[in-house]
Length: 153
Ligand SMILES: [Zn+2]
Image 1 (cartoon, rainbow, N blue to C red):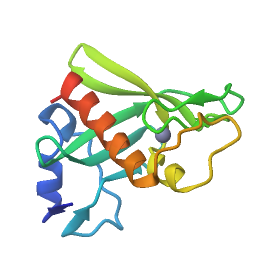
Image 2: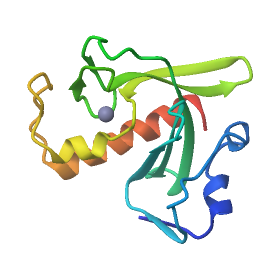
Image 3: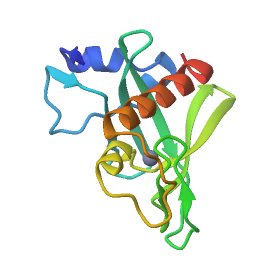
Image 4: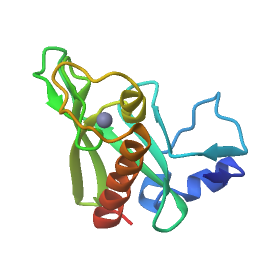
C-alpha cells in the first residue's frame, strides 16, 4: 500500500510526457492510499487514467490511456489484464504514449474496472481461472507493472 500525500505528488507518478494530460476527479482527496491501483475516466470519456502501486519499484506509477472509438455493438473481447470477456464496447483498445511518435496499445476493460470484476462471479464467456481472488489481484498488478516496465518506465 502506498500513501500519496498531495495532488502534485500524484502527478509526479506520471511520466513527464503524460503529466500535462492528467486531470483529477474533483472528489479525489489527499492524502490518498493506493492499495493496488486507482483508475478513473475523464468526464469526456476520451481518456482513462491509471495509478498503480508498482510492486517492483515500490512506487506509484501513473499511465494516461487514450480510448479509441468503440461502437456499442462491438464483438466481445478479452481484457489483457483481468481476462474478463465483455461485449458492447466494455473491453476495447486503450493506448499509451511511448514517445512523441509512438504509442502502444492493449485490449483492456475501457474503464479499468478489472479488480471489481475479479470480485464478481465470472461472466458466461470468461476464461475460467481457479486462483483465489487475492492471487488474481496480484497477477493483475504484475501485468500492469510488466507492461509499464516493458514499454513506458
Ligand atoms: Zn480488465
